[in-house]
Image (cartoon, rainbow, N blue to C red):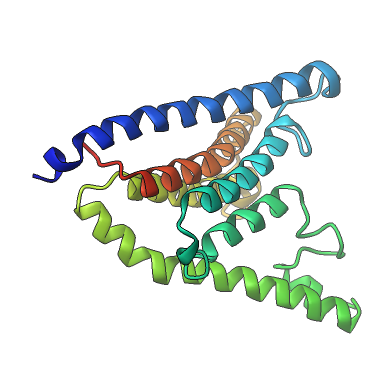
Length: 223
């Protein structure tokens, strides 16, 4: 009965989601292509500050904009953690988390070192805000995601995929360095593959977020 009621809208939204996905894909390809042609100078496209990292930051910004364009204004304050997370992740992609301090704002070295008290206080507030919005997203959004998933909605699957990609990319980040602590040495080829998977996985996190936002407020269902 649910599919009969929303079938036409769901088909229309599926077309919209396809267009959004390929739009994001085109943006990724464009950034990487421009970087490789004009800026890379033979370096890898997945390097720090390269096209892939930059387009990730841009896509997080796009996700925040898409939220405000699609979510009803009355929901903005209740769901402020969604665009906040997008902006925080964009800033992290641009290395803002460690651009103004000796260590990252989430690094214990910053607070145990000889940084000034004001630096520690500001960094601590930023870190607390980041932790707060992430926890709020889990506590507030988790039950809703589960409920909507059971109801056959499509958008929770994109949200879950985004979360899974976050966990996956963080797990394989610096894989060789992590494994060597357990006496496991991986080959250079394996390390390069893990690095590629990490960077590609990271760029699709905001893509999944954009798809989740669009699907949520356009009424798509998992037919």
